[in-house]
Structure formats: C-alpha cells, structure tokens
Image 1 (cartoon, rainbow, N blue to C red):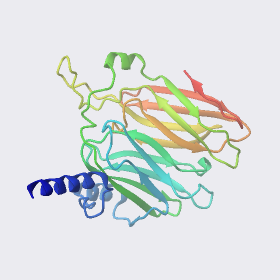
Image 2: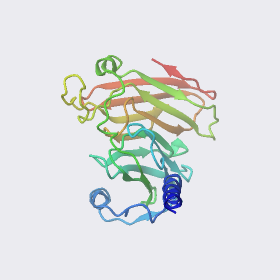
Image 3: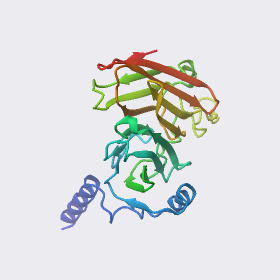
Length: 276
C-alpha cells in the first residue's frame, strides 16, 4: 500500500512539473511592485489586459535565468492611422522592474520586439503597449527563473572589455517596401549590473551596461529603446522595418558610461548583413 501511495505522489509531482501553469497555481499578478510601477509610469490610466494588441512570449520555466528569451509580439500592423507607438517590458522581481521602454515609428511596419533578459527571481513579466489613440494594453506571464541578475558573466571580464562595442547588424530576410523585414542589432558588451562577484578577487564588479539603443533607416528614426541591466550580456534587439528603394540601416548604442558605438549597413530590396 505504501509503495502505491509513493508512486501516486511521484506521478502527481511529475505531472505538476510538466503541465503549463494555470491561473490557480500562479501567485496574484497584482503585486506591490506592479502597483508602484503602474502609478509611476501610467498615472492611474486604464490598462486593458488582453492579447488583442500585444502578447508577451516568454518561457514557462527558463533554462538559463541569465539569458531568458522574450518577445513583445504585436498583434496589429503599424499603419499611419493606428499603430503601437510605445511598449514597456516590466519584470516585477528584478532589482529595477522597468527593463525597457521602447518607442516605435509607424514606418517600422511591425512593432514586434525580441531580446534576452536576466531574471532574478520567480516573477510576473509584463508587456504594455500604448497605441496611437492613447489606450494602454497589457499582456502578462509568470516566469520561473532565478539568480539571473547575480550570475557571473559568461566570459572573462577583461576579454569582454577588449571586445567592447563591436557591433553587428543582421537583416534576416528579403522584403519589399510593402512587407516588413526583420533585423537584429547585436553589441558586444558585458552589461555588468554591479551584482556580479569577481570569482578571483571576491569583489563586486562595478556596473557598466547598455542604457539606450537607437535605430534609424534612410535617415528616419525607427525605434529608440531605453533599457537597463536586465538585458543579458552582449545585448541584442530584433525588430522590423520597411525597406525602401535604398537606404542605410544604422544603430547607435550608448552605455552607462556614455560610451557610444555605431554600426550601419546599406539595405536594398535584397538585404545583406554587415559585421565589424
């Protein structure tokens, strides 16, 4: 009898691990952190919780808390009369909850944003989108990950600093002026947050992280992203834009020490990649 009970308990535990989280198993999403962030950023404005405008994609259980893939998936196209003009990524359980505030031009065609973040503890993660009519829409997800902010850097810090600021712009697919192309900006940067301990000296490494990413195409701003050290080491940002007859896709990265790095690539109807 005892053996049968133990087997039943083990099966129940395994099933609980494998099944997706339900609303009943997740803690309340109405956290004190979110209340404070909402009051500070949105001043009591109504926020509609739905996936009609934006949907947050993040793993149920992260494989690596220091590199958690996140997508802010737009559910509408960017059109002159109705578009997403700003998005925020909020991670309640991180030392600084507002991980990113991103302004997107309607010329981008799509407002999808992909990146990788650190997560310090099991937490609610939220994507908030403001549309051109001034309304706010939110999508949230409970993510199981911990220790990402204090995890040591993946590489030797001196080696990482030697590569500091090296950038790559990758345009992933050919597109027409009517169909948005996807592109990724990548920058070599340790993105230190001041919480990582040097394993040799046992001292905390001073904070030094990317704080702003700006992208333009053919001289017109596509997006600006004010970010913090929640972004993983060697930050990257994937976005969309509409190729025209020809133009330069340019990225500018500014870090917390006001160091500025730039990279650009000429984009035609058949995009190419550029590496420096």
